[in-house]
Length: 210
Image 1 (tube, rainbow, N blue to C red):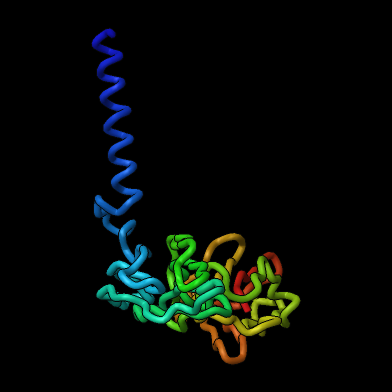
Image 2 (tube, rainbow, N blue to C red):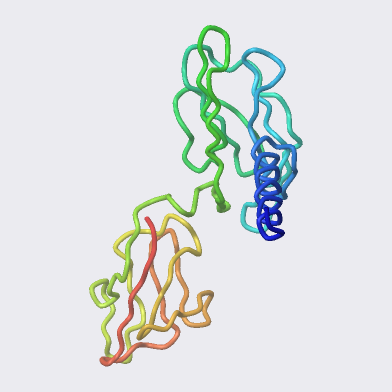
C-alpha cells in the first residue's frame, strides 16, 4: 500500500468515525444537537435535548426533559412552541410550531423515532414564516385603487397580510422601505400609503401573505 493510499484510508476512517459520532449524538455540534430526540428511560418516554429557539429578536431556551405519557399504539407528534415549550399530541403538528419528531408506539414501546427537525424561524405570532398563509406575488397596486397620476398615493391590498412586516412593496423594481420612509401600511385594513405619489410611468407591485 502506498503512502497516498494509507492517507486516503486514514481520511475515510476519520470521516466514518466523525459521521457516526454525530449521528448517534456522541459529538455535540452547535445547533445540530438542539432539540435532538432520543429514547428516554421509560418504555413510552422520549428524551429531547436542550436547545434554543428564536422568535423575532427574542431567544428562548429549552432546558431538556423527558416527555412523559406518550400515547401507545399510535403516532405521536413532538413539537415546540416559539418559547421552547415541548409537547406531544396524536393529531398532528400544530400550525406555527417547531416540529421535532414523529414517534410511533405499539405494545407499550417506542417502535420508531423519526427526527423531523429543520432550520426554521417563527415570527412573533408563533406562525411559521415559511409556510403560513397564501402567497401573493407582484400584486399590481393600480388594480387596488392606486391612480398613477402624481397625486394619488393610497391603495388597499386585495387581502390583509397575515404577518406584519412580511409585505414587500416595489416601485419600478426597487424594494421600498416601510415605516413612512417610502410607505406606511395598516395591517388591519391592508391600506398602503406611499410617501411620494407615483406617476403614470411608475409601477408599484406588492408581495405578501394572507
